[in-house]
Amino acid sequence: MNLLIDSLDHHWQHRNDYFVGGNMFLYYSAAPVKNQVKNQDFRGPDFFAVLGVERQRDRKYWAIWDEGGQYPDVIIELMSDSTATIDLTTKKHRYERTFKTADYSVYDPYDPRSLQGWHLGEDQRYQALQADDRGWLWSQALGLWLGLWQGEIHRESALWLRFYVQTATSFNWIPKPPKNRHNKLNNRQNRPCNRQSKPNNVPSDSLPNCVLWGLIRLSDHRCSDHNRLERSLCSSRDP
Image (cartoon, rainbow, N blue to C red; front, top):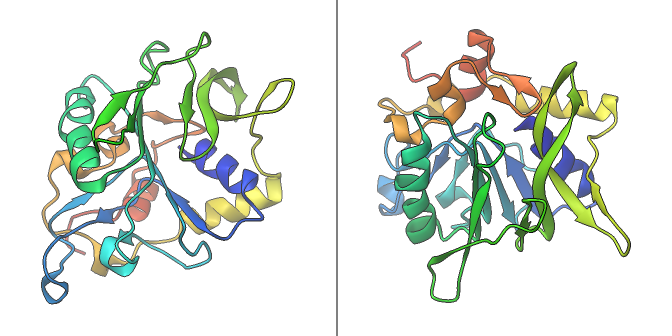
């Protein structure tokens, strides 16, 4: 999901009222403040965006009680054969009923027809989004289109999920940031995790799908380096 994260950061580079992340733990314990812990009630969305928050804070995870009760406004999960059922049932129900996330989308990188999404209606229930003729979905929360793009990134030719901005005459995909800024973003996102924040017991439906797949393309990179994956996703093993 780095492509989506980096491109949205680049598109909103002059804004300071949002946070975008992915493959990091999100804690949402509803317990009283004194009892809030990070070993229960958590998820690991592949991509999420939160609006109306301070952008510049250094975050190793997202804890609802540290963020004024703010839940993600947008979540995107990457599906596979082994995660699709959870993504379409357990997670969808949680994002609708507990998170009340405005826009939720799922996509299987190996099935170009799998992109689908939902928007939270006035009745606080998800309504299926109707794709346009290109198969794109409109994100009301972001004010952007989410669709597929065929091209080569890092010498890999594939169909990539991308955000598109609509102009008066056309639809343009949002570019990646310049190389030097892209490296800066990657360095920020790949810093070592705070091991104090890791859960002790991690149910499979709470992990980012990248972990569940083991080796998989995540937009513009592959999670094939176990050590890098362990650092960036806070392994649940004791040090």
